[in-house]
Structures are given as structure tokens and as C-alpha cells.
Amino acid sequence: MPDLPGYGMSSIPPVSGNHEAYSKRSMASVMREMMRVLGYRTFFAAGHDRGGRVGYRLALDHPDTIPRLAVLDILPTSDYWDRMNRVFGLKVYHWMFLAQPFPFPEKMIAAAPVRYLEHTLASWTAEKNLDCFAEGALEHTRAWFCEPDRISACCEDYRAGATIDYEHDIADRNAGNIIRAKMLALWGDKGIATSVDDPLAVWQAWCPHVEGHSLAAGHFLPEEAPKATGETLLDFFSS
Image 1 (tube, rainbow, N blue to C red):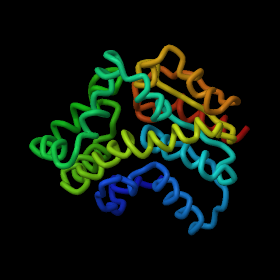
Image 2 (cartoon, rainbow, N blue to C red):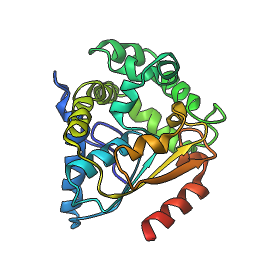
Image 3 (tube, rainbow, N blue to C red):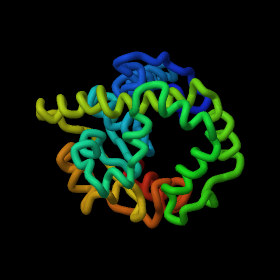
Image 4 (cartoon, rainbow, N blue to C red):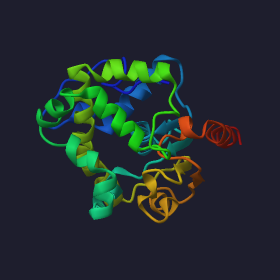
């Protein structure tokens, strides 16, 4: 269960004008190489939020690598941007805030990083609090999120989402590329993906044979609905 580049305890790629090191294409290549080093040419993948974006990019760019893919509480990046209206913008305002040019969002967050982190995490849960998170996990996340370079890495991730990741998605759609892996999409019934009426229909445009449904949770399915999430993933990956 690796931390994505720039997050947690992983190495921090350099900031650049085109944000390429933080593109999901680059992160997918890192994950593929990590698994190759560990001895796996093919593997199943499950990703939540940013990890889900890396997962579906991996399935598009390296279709022979991923026979099965599960994504948790996301829609494709380009679909979010193309649907950005008043309702969407209020729900995912951080997409636009974090994508602002360096160093504006970094300086704003660095003024009170723990306060920003805890407010953001709580706002995405169904109960609007931090009760679903283990204290050890929160302590770990508070620690790394206070590092200026990691704050910048998080912002670069979203800058990539607003630029190069969007361009990669549109190029795939224009080329008629689809996700060939067997795919599962899960989302919380009070999660971010419910910004659209039918999240599964959105994914069907990318993967005609995708299956999926909602779970009783906010954005953080593994923490808010661990039993249901675990059982659903095990059923999918073992069937």
C-alpha cells in the first residue's frame, strides 16, 4: 500500500512548470515500476481518491498490467472539470484552490496546516467529523502535511489534474480508448462522486463492462464503512 509520490513518506518529485512529475501518467509509471521490482508483471489495483486516478490511468496506459481495477469515490478527472458548475464548485472547491499557481495555496495552507487538514478531512465524511480515523493515522498525516515541500506536492498534484491530467483524459476520449480491465466503482452515498446523479453511468463511458454501487459512507469508504468496503473488494478481486 504505497504512498503516492510526494505524499506520506514517499520521495518528493520536483515542482515544474508543466507539473509532469505529478501527472497521473507519471505516478502510474512509478507504481508499475515498483511492482516490477517486487516481481509482479501483472497485478490487481484498488485506489481511493488520488490513488483511484492513478489506477485508471494505469489501466489506460498499461492495459496488459491491470486485469482488475477498483476505484473508490471518484469520477474521471476530465468529467469533474467538464461538469464544474455552481453545485460542483462548492463541493470540490479545493480542486480550483489547490490548482492556483505556486506559491499562493502553499502559503495559505502553511499558515495553519493542521487546521486546514482537519477541516478538509472532516468535511468529506458523512458525519462531518474525524471520528472514523484512527488517531495514529491522523498523527502521521498531521506530521507529514506540515512539511512545506509536501504541502507543495499536494498542490502540484491538483495543478496536474487541472492541466496535463485533463489533457491526457481528453486525448484518450478523442482516440476512443477505453479501460479494458474488469472494473469496480464504489462511492459513498454521501461522498464526492454523488455530485452527479449516476456515477456508474459516467464510468460506463470509459469502461463499458464496469460494475459498481454506493455504500453508506461519505468520501472515505475504507474508514467510514470498513466491513462493507472490505467485503465488496474481496468479492470483486476473488471472483
